[in-house]
Length: 162
Image 1 (tube, rainbow, N blue to C red):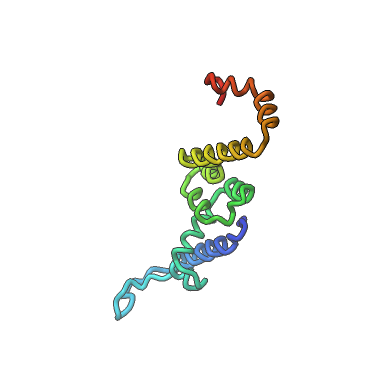
Image 2 (tube, rainbow, N blue to C red; image 1 turned 60 degrees about the vertical axis):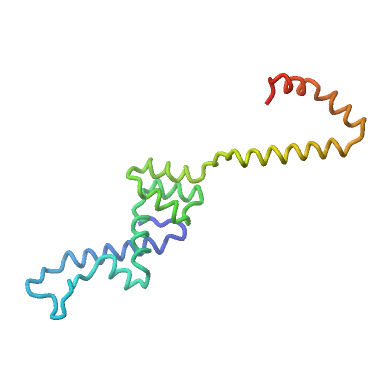
C-alpha cells in the first residue's frame, strides 16, 4: 500500500481494519445465544481495530477513507503539499473518479477571488500610498511625474484606462 506524508498511521490503520474484517469473514457463525448478559456480541471491524491501535474509531474511519484515495490523487496531494491536510484529503476521497479527486485537491490550492471588501481595502491602500508619495516630493518631482505619465493620466480620465 502506498503511503503519503504523515498519513502513515492512516494506511496502517486501514491495513489493520482489513485484517480484522478478514478474521471475521473466516469465523464460522454462532448458532446459539451470544452471551447470557445480552448484547450483540459483535467483534471485529473498525471498533475493534481502533481499540487495538488505541485510536478513536472516527479517526480510523477517516484514515480508511484517505487510504482509499487513488494513486493519482496521492501523487497530486504530495505535489501540492496537501498530503498532511486531512480535510483536503477527505474532501478528495468523497469523489469517485481519480480525475475528480485530483480536481478537488487542485481546487484547494486555487487562489480565492478577492472579495469586494478586500479589493476596496487594497484600493484605499494604493490611493494612500500615491497621496503620500505625491505629498513627499517637491514641485519639480510632481511636474516630472505628470509629464512622464501624461498619456496614461489622459487615458484614465477619458475612461480608457483601468
